[in-house]
Image (cartoon, rainbow, N blue to C red; front, side):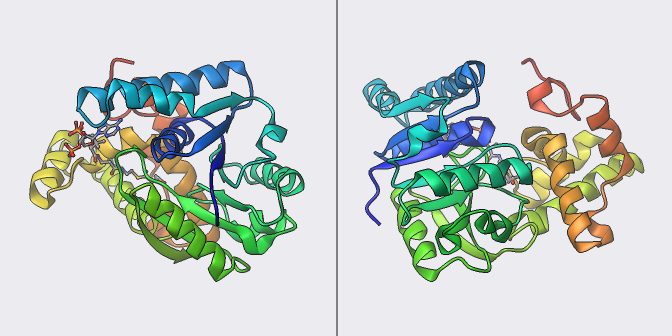
Length: 284
Ligand code: 3HC
């Protein structure tokens, strides 16, 4: 697969990280958001992340400028028509994703891989919305995308081995390590992570220990970068609840049943860092 230009659909938390990472990898990027205010949001997230990368000496000012110049922003999906690979990272809504995949299948060249960053939607279902199910796969990045080294590749029922090989080679050029999983809810990381995060919420609910002590125990006792409640705030309580609900719906296993406290916090708007309050409070 000869990739020069990558289309990225969606510039939210994950999408903007993917745009930044792909541009830093030396590719031209066509980044599509729904409207001008969403475009501005994506640009701002990339600006902030670039500033952090600069501060920590990961890139130079000149590299940041080159990287930004590689990104073309649009609100029009048809502007992705000449892309050599497209990565979708919109909200976790099956119908919206299916519409995007069906449209991308119509406008891009037939051999172009259409990948999804989804953490919960079935790749087989997205592939079925296209005319090229063998060229559709999951490409699941982790937050923060420029920093986290892992990419999970997900093989839908009809995804070809060639597609996985092409994506593995592409991910390697972004300095990511690839693991592959079947099209099963949670893939590898969330299969393990979601029950663990839900258990941590239950521990708070049951007053087993304070949230600070639960986090400290995991950080120092297991050498994790973040304890589970800090990680929940980082990932987003709404995102975690959404993934847990999809997994519960699909697998019907109690380990994926969200505790009432998580649902109540999401209802109250305590979504984590992004809303300024989750298990902890943040200055937004
Ligand atoms: N661009 C490039 N590099 C950056 C950067 C950026 N924007 N920001 C930070 N870095 C680099 C730093 O230079 C540093 O690199 P080094 O180790 O080589 O010096 C490294 O990233 C860590 O940065 P810092 O030490 O300065 O920052 P923190 O200590 O504040 O770490 C963190 C921040 C990376 C978020 C860390 O806390 C962490 O790894 N947390 C866990 C994150 C996690 O588990 N993510 C997965 C979530 S699950 C998910 O995404 C799946 C979904 O489906 C739910």
